[in-house]
Length: 163
Image (cartoon, rainbow, N blue to C red):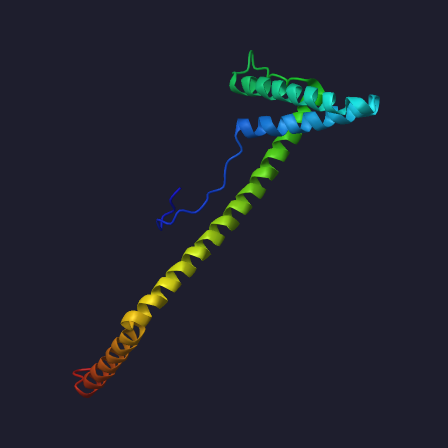
């Protein structure tokens, strides 16, 4: 996106339902993985897969409930009871933390690439300066300007009227 100065800088992402869904799948998958591995060590993979599928289902139902109006003034209960509520909260935390880390690294990458671009511009300017003597001409022009300003200030001081 573009900022007011016109320089594109990576903007922080907002946590979407899709991000929360992925976070809930991770949280539920890890929890079910631990439960299945505690029952039987060979079941860790099956527990993780079942937990991720259940987390996907929980988040899909939660999105539907969040978008539906309350019936008779009663706010609907999140799906899955305590486990579902905990998985959704953990999923939201996982998603927001991941997005913060992602935004940080995106900003770092942007600054790294900007630094590379600045270095390329510097090298190009150095090549052109060697060829055309740009910096010497700019220094002479600045010196001439300063000399003219000093002369004008002196003239203005000598010819001051009514102050």
